[in-house]
Length: 128
Image (cartoon, rainbow, N blue to C red):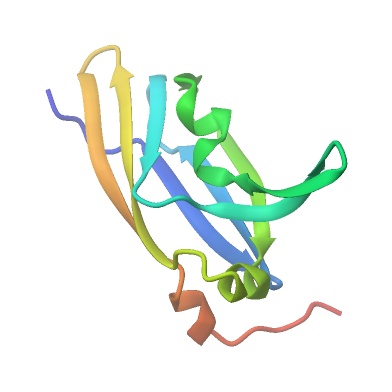
């Protein structure tokens, strides 16, 4: 049985910072949540030993490990400064396939489209 989507994965720019929010806006427990990205998403650099490498956002355990999410539960994370993300020619258009299970409705699957280039056209302001 196909239910209405319960999970949203949103990429937002706030104060020149690109971040994501993953939320369960439904009224049921979402089980075995897995999200697959159509393209690799490289975030900001971080230190591993003596090397700096870009974090693969699309490979985070949050998206790959089959977590359960309660109604209203939300995760968020830093991706990169938006200007740096664009300068490194990271994907501005990609999609994610969302897969999970609901107790009463069984397996659910749908695709979300992400168009990060819309953030380039919006005026920005600084909080003082």
